[in-house]
Length: 633
Image (cartoon, rainbow, N blue to C red; front, side, top):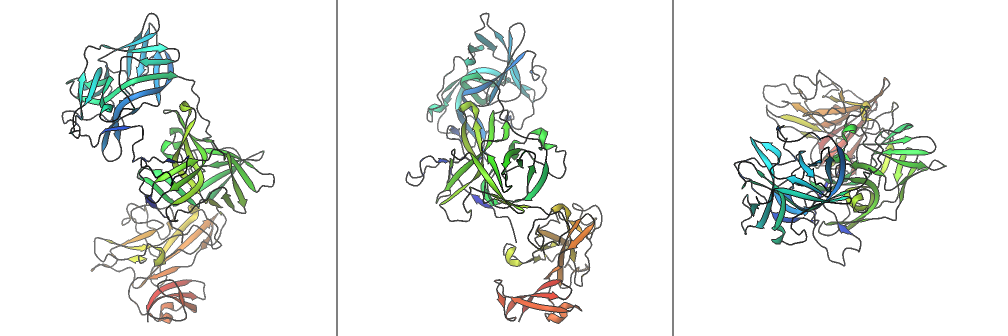
């Protein structure tokens, strides 16, 4: 039985391994739960004032205050790369941290009529979508932005631009004011000097390279609440530079190319950099290929998890309900039709807001004895190939085993982040596939493989669990294998299953009982029914063993899988599992069926010559069906 293996790895990305353990050229992998090396942590677990709700631009929805400019003003819009230093809040899923770090992403400036200039989100840590108004100097060399302009409104108060200074406020930095803060009311304007393609924010001080506590000594652009200037938002900019460069999006194929669409069932191993950290697992779901003209082949979503967290809005509403693909990469089919060659550095996702591209690359990772992950981008690998072997696509140039003992080394096809503004520097995103083998999905009427009810494959538990009380639910644990009897993948869209009671009687799932799963009474359940009680891994039965209720099963329960294509239905065997105590005489178990043969297995899965002790009997009948019972001899 195939099942998902999830290995959660605790990674300390900032840890340094000994020089003789990690080869030159490898660097530690950052995760969502670690702070970037270029951030200085000023305070952990920061508490907020009670008088005003803390402004969090990730979750707050700005009100449409008449005094705040939310609509883009008229004029010539210019896009800049943003750089410089900032103090701002970093929410790392657990505690809010106050950090200093580099500004990044885009800055937007509109040059209007009559010398008016408008800047969007002038404070890096306060991205509210608001514009502030400035004036171009007569000689065109400076932009003057008056302080006191509102950029956000909440509970009747506004956050207003100001000039401020900060200093480290002592060892008690877990209070909501971790550092001293002073508004400099002498500064009434922010001044940006125009020097060629750059805008420089004048009159600020601060050092990104300063260690703690000097990292908290900053003088620059900030904002305070209008009702009380001591209620600081704790965000401040210094050394700000806006650099204008041509907007050059990395090419990404988001529309399905023309040609013959073939879909495959994924297998192999993957590494995922997700919200809970890094995990390794077995690939699952589908992969898609389009075989086009002139020897072109396009692969949709070549890496298991690549791009999902940066899904463009236009892709989320797929016109094809059967599948949804975020991006395609282009390859070339060899003349003999046995190999697909895919160039690296192709775009998977273009993140316009942050001006970065997510691209294909070949990457090697090292996992040391402590679970720390280091990586190296193999720049010399400019292309990777898939071998076409019958109904299989096999990715070449990968190696590794996620079940190997640490330290381990793995090479695979990966997603990397490309920073064009930093001379196309690349870092590994944490998403990678290796040992990839994709199997073409069969859509002709074939006999589906028997479902699994083997306790050894069900996480060490019996296939049946009976809660034995009125309020609970008994449960059959099973696994429907998406393959035919020859091991070829089948399409889950055409798969259904039924449950059988003692004497091959179909069990009816009543809609009024299975409220979250069904809209009508059913004896045949679609594979993709996902709810509280029905999935392809378990089926629940309510009040099966409570006093005063009819028991659905006297001694055994069975499951059968169907595969129906164009009106032709093929069925697996009915696989039975003994639920309650019953006479273990095999001839009685057959219950009027003719037994063709019986094979016995001990609890370790080894076949026995005859029943002895606690064992499993697999009974085959002359009609081709089988059943499984537990014996005590």
